[in-house]
Length: 284
Image (tube, rainbow, N blue to C red; front, side):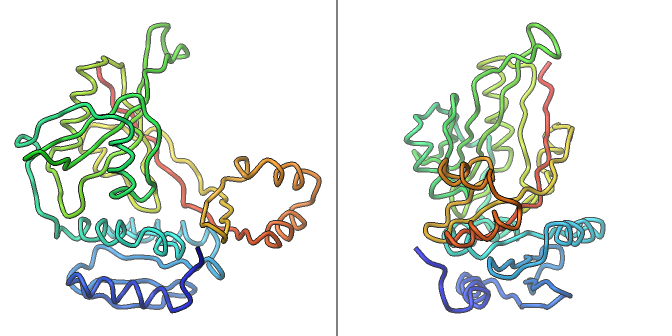
């Protein structure tokens, strides 16, 4: 798999137009932004894998937009290349163009890990992940939303019997927004396994976490931007401590500049995220 050679920014703009969304590219200092004709609150920051500003500069720009009541999404070239359908669906949802379904019209069912995998591979930008508890909202026999959670974990630093569970993934089916859907799934989880809290993370590249705040979650920490190595051969992203073992063994013997040169020689390039917000929902 390789990055498309045509201008991916133009390809994105054309793909949006193909689903009825007009936009324009706007240069802003060292950034290339995409703004929408009928929405002045949402912007995309288009980040090339070969030449891009640093994480500090990008996070500062994001903070400026947030302070003015606007949302700035960080969209990387490789993510668009691999997940174009999911990105178009996510943008459609953020612009309020999805078909709305009220959660009270849906039913909650337990699903298998393979069923969750299929749903998230199609509808979540990060794909799927293993989970202990998996629930779907169904309407007319179709999955319209899925949430997955970890097993209960003891938090003895808080109390001997205190337990917490992590919301790992949540997504709705392409083209749908389920009002109250995540709330319904979390309430079902709480009723079923009785944790003391539910914990989750908001990916700052795509969300400021306002939806969690509306559900009663409390923001308890902000994780800083993280360095990531992108393998150009298959677009796999690695945090440094999760690079293939043979690579990790080699770079431990090298200086930072030497590490970069070595990874570049293997066709790895450095990218980053803008961090995460950690949220906790007290249940009792």
